[in-house]
Length: 240
Ligand SMILES: O=c1ccn([C@@H]2O[C@H](COP(=O)(O)O)[C@@H](O)[C@H]2O)c(=O)[nH]1
Image 1: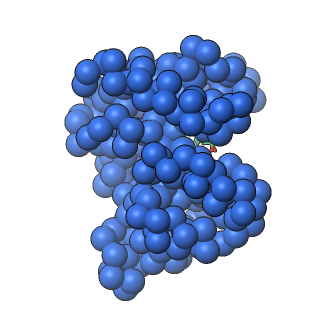
Image 2 (image 1 turned 90 degrees about the vertical axis):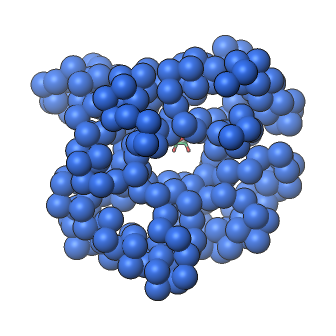
Image 3 (image 1 turned 135 degrees about the horizontal axis):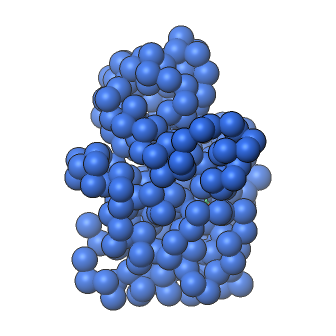
């Protein structure tokens, strides 16, 4: 896969007009992410727009609820024809198993291939200290992320979302067929923002990520096209 196709850019903007403007400004981007802010504002209209532009779509709504409610929501969003959907691994085994069936049903009903379901292991904005002291999880962070990924894999999900700092371990344990998507990616020249477990794009790919989610370093850059090109050049230099 060309390196450009491994970068997913989030449309973290409040309106459909701003989202469309970004897509038009960055025609080189093939994979866009629609998250909570934009989806709450526009509903599925933005997904139709992206699909009409032949873009791949990552619907990052991070579903987290009881199994029946998760299944109902996933059945509905699986009728949109998106490529990737996130759920929280902490919804638990029964919910993860339920969403698998629901995604197949919804996609089949709409005549689309099943979307790939990927589970959030631990948000990249959280630190070891947050996990231990605020969330009261008495497990080291890398072990916790791994256990959440394994829960997703045992529940037949397609992959997981993890920080680049955990991706090498997850790749080694979960194998090559398990999709690993990494947000929290920061080129050396970008600021960290609220990301706490970051790595550079090339280090994240070398560590085993399938896809990188890179937002503000591109979309909030003074020149988004130049920022995109700089990241692609850095990745192309890896020669992978
Ligand atoms: O653990 C997670 C899960 C999802 N995200 C999402 O990725 C992007 C990152 O954007 P940046 O501007 O590159 O920080 C954003 O849409 C998050 O909702 C994440 O960061 N961490």
